[in-house]
Structure formats: structure tokens, C-alpha cells
Image (tube, rainbow, N blue to C red; front, top):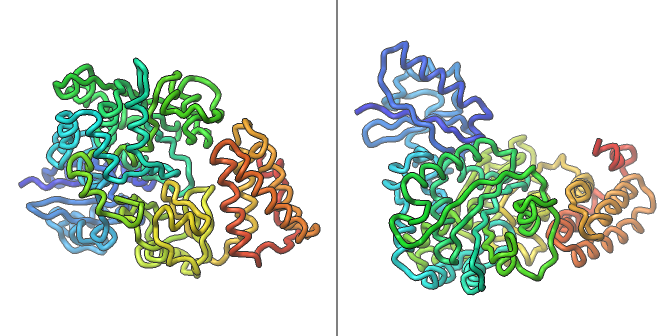
Amino acid sequence: MTPVIYVPCDAAALAVGANRVVEAIASELSARGITAELVRNGSRGLHWLEPMVEVRFGDRRVAYGPVRPADVPGLFDAGFLEGGAHPLFHGDTEEIPFLKNQTRLTFARCGLTDPLSLDDYGSNGGLIGLRNALAMQPAEIVQQVTDSGLRGRGGAGFPTGIKWNTVLKAPGARKYIVCNADEGDSGTFADRMIMEGDPFVLIEGMTIAGIASGASKGYLYTRSEYPHAIETMQAAIGIARKAGILGQSVLGSNYAFDMDVRVGAGAYVCGEETSLLNSLEGKRGVVRAKPPLPALEGLFGCPTVVNNVLSLASVPVIMDRGADFYRDFGTGRSHGTMPIQLAGNIRHGGLYEAAFGITLGELVNDIGGGTLSGRPVKAVQVGGPLGAYFPPELFDTPFDYEAFAAQDGLIGHAGVVVFDDTADMLSQARFAMEFCAIESCGKCTPCRIGAVRGVEVVDRIAHGDRPEEQIDLLKDLCNTMKLGSLCALGGFTPYPVMSALTHFPQDFTPKPDTLKPLAEAAE
């Protein structure tokens, strides 16, 4: 049997030389007269091992990594096409503890298959959910998604089935599905990994959403910083259209659904659904006041489902395995699995999909291996640049929506960014305010002005200008932004600021000449 060599085409692997590794492997195969199949797969999400090269021979699939071009001749000398021993050898891929201990539902195929092979997709469980959906009435599909307990994976955690049901029942000759792939949170990459590593699952999920809600057109909105994801999604859509998965008759049914990719300029606020819709319409990306809700008056004034990539990519497994199967994973009101992204100062960074309920301490210390620097963990920010900072004292917090809310935090898109004991939390609080000031769309005063004032107040604390008085002012400002902002950008900026102040008060002491004014830092 001809061995198969897998080298990821995922952006994380490309960034550390995957293409050069492919060239070295191809050159070595030619020079040695060896026949092997070379497949560009998605990433498995073990980012500290990228580029991670896998070899399949017989019934085994083994991993080597991180592989550099200079390592390739030695791998061939060691007989890596037959699983030969080498310092970079990690054994059977599925037995690597980081991967073995996951519960992969949404990411079941990512890294396993050729992203643009429909045959691979179908032979690994793809399209079963869509075929099941086509045999049901739209209301039945909505009910199954509702019964599964699936909640929005983009931040707010709103029940997906309720949103779909609202659009289904809304009057309108034209309805839309919009996939929010504007992944702008720091430390997040799950959306990109799906688009680059398993694009058909997203197409299948969007198609099911269209059938369920009565929409015949979908748009995937992503950012210009994701060129590989854009290219892969466009290619996959073309393949799906040619295969009859998209078009006037979905898999030969009476349902029509088609979709396109739209690229934004990368404004963080366009991750908010109404700003995204404005951008999608060719307008300035500013927040819309609600009501009306996008489910009733969304894209071009029509009823619109706006869901995150991970929400839509979770739908096929629900339609395949059933609502009860999916709902049994998790804890409390947080059902199913969550692809958690481990980043920052962490030894084993990458994507770890697990059922809700795993604790923050397990993620950071047991799975992530602690800090890469070897120093003690000081804080973990969960939920992107607007997420709260958790100290080690709160590491027993289970990963679920309500538990995080009880600690004045949010799961968001499940980005986990680790900081060691050299981090200055006053500087981190300042960064949150500065980030909001730069990224604000300017629509509402609490966000537009409040963030600028916030930077000024933090600077005064740092320079010893009546620090106690300024801290009281900062608390009041955060309360105003939280309650008065139109969207989550201004409304959630207080989370990192207040958590830093609450859990690390020792850092809010004068630090003369350590912080630059906002105008200078923004140049």
C-alpha cells in the first residue's frame, strides 16, 4: 500500500514553514525514487508541534513534529514512511494525550482529511446531517436544534434554535443566513481552522440553517487578514455547487440554497452582528440600535439568521446524531462541546475541544502545561480583549456560560490567553481602554468618549496623580460604559479593566514614565 504523507495547509503551519517542508519532502521522494501520496490536510490543533507531519501506512497514522526542512532527510533515513523511530516521533497521532483526551464533535474531521475532498468529507460522516434535514420539515429541524441546547459560540451564548425559529416565523419573501467569521478576538483561531481545515462542515451547517429558516441565500463574512481561509472557502463553495450541495436544488430536493464569501477590512467592531450587516451592505461598519432585531430586520431589511462559524459547524453533528446525543455533553445550561483555544504564554498552545464543565485550571495547567516561560501563571484572560482576567485563585471555575458570568467574566469565543508573573495588570487595563478607543465605531458616547477618558484615568493612576480618587473615577466610568454602550465593545471593555483592578490591586500603584499617552502610542 502506498504511504500517505500529510502536511497541514493551515495558516498556523504555513507560518512556521509547512510549505518549505512539503518542498523538502517532495525533493527527497524524487531523489530516492520513492512513491508516496502527499496530502495537504488541516491542522490537528497541536500548534507547538507545527508543522506536524503525519504518515499513514497500513492501518496506522503516526506523527512527527515540529518538522523543519533540514529534518526531512533524517526522517527518511529513519524510515518515517513506516513509522521509524526519530527524535521528532510522537507515535500514533490519535494517542497523543493532547488529542486523545478531547471530545471532538465540531472538529471531528479537522486535520484528518483533505479539506477540499468531498469524498474524504463524505467517508468521514459528512452530509448525513444535511440528508436527514432534507427529510424533515423546517420546524422539525428548528426543534431538533433547540432541543440540543446549542447556544451561540461567538460570545453571547444565545440559544441557536430560538433565533432560527424567529426567522422561520418572520414574514418576508426573502431571508438570509449570515455566518459571522470575523474572528477578531486575541488568542482565537477556531473559525479559521474550520474554514481552512473542514470547510464543507460550515457549508453543510449553513445549508441546514437555510432550509430550517426559509432562507435561500447565505453569506460568509470574514476579514481580509484570513487569505488562506478565504481561498479555501471559495474553492469549497465551488466544489459544493458543482456537486449539487448548493444551488437551486439542494441534493436534488425542492430546497434552494446558495452562498458566497464577503471580505471585510478587519474592523473589530464588525464582529458585532449589526455592524457586520452594515458592512455587508456596503455601508460604514457602525452599530445599529436594537430593536429591530436582525432576526426580523437584518440584511437588506430582511429576516436574517446571524450565527458564528462554530455554531453553524456544530449543526451537522446534531442533525446526524440527534439532539439528545449532543445535549448529553456539558453541564448546566451549557450543552455540547466548546473548541477552546489556548494561547499566550503557554507551553502547549492550540485547539482543545471538550465538553463544557472542564475547569480553567485543568485547561491551563494540565492540558496547556503551564507557562512556556516556566514562570508562575499570574492571570488568564478568557473571551478575547474584552474578557475578564482570572487569577489562579479562580482556576476551579468550570468552563460554562453561567459559571463565568457569576465571576463577572465571559466565555466569548473561548480564547484563553495566559500571562506569567511578569505581566503588569495596570498596563493590561490600559490596553483594554486603548483598544476600545481605537476600535470604537463612534456610534455611542459611552464607548467613543468613555474609552478615551479611561486611558487618561489609568495614566493618571500610573503617574501617581491622586490614585485613590482616580480609581473611584475609573470604577464609575466602567459602570457607565457597561450600562450605556450600544454594543458589547463598549459594554464589555469594563470586564478586563475591573477584573484587573479587583484581582490585582497591587499593580495599580504609581509607575512614573512607564506609559505613553494614547496619541503617541497610537501613532
